[in-house]
Length: 262
Image (cartoon, rainbow, N blue to C red; front, side, top):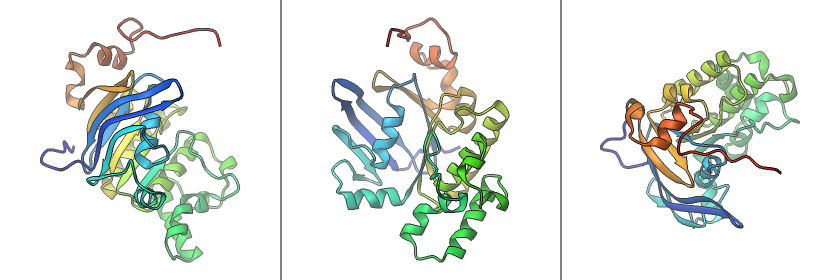
């Protein structure tokens, strides 16, 4: 596993904030992710994990703070400069976000076809290769998203995320809604493919078993900040009562669930 020791961070997040009106989601996020490592983000629902991923890829702009990729602060980037960052970043969205009107192979290579001068035959061949990387056969290439199961959609989404061999891989709840067997399979695919392309990977997940399996380090976000970050080997003895309650799924502790009328 990659601990990042002796390397400059691939991604540096310093004091990043993001609000939507009166709702303050990120309240000063500080985090470093090193080249080739897999960082898993955990935390209660609506704590800002997905928002942070969108800030990294440039779909959301932080209100303040610094977000460096390869040493360049991307917060003030122009549209063209952000496109350059997105070109080396692959993302799997929580609901896969496949285009219903396109067959699987076109979904997988959608961005690839926009930025590279490749024939349809070449693009189709790349899609077949990436399907194989996520454990799907060539026969899936010509299917449409509504013909796929939930697990197949997740794997197609992963194939699209890795289609251009990105330097950075961002995965938002890649196993949400899957049964335990499929969850284990997708987690193994994530680890295998991230290592194969050497990507710096950030994964948002609510599945602690999966987090332990794929992570080099785990960071917990609570109340808009990172309250603990460390290697998987240390998660059972963090001394952090919030983290301890969360990973052991205890109903009592400092994290209080709020229930109310809509």
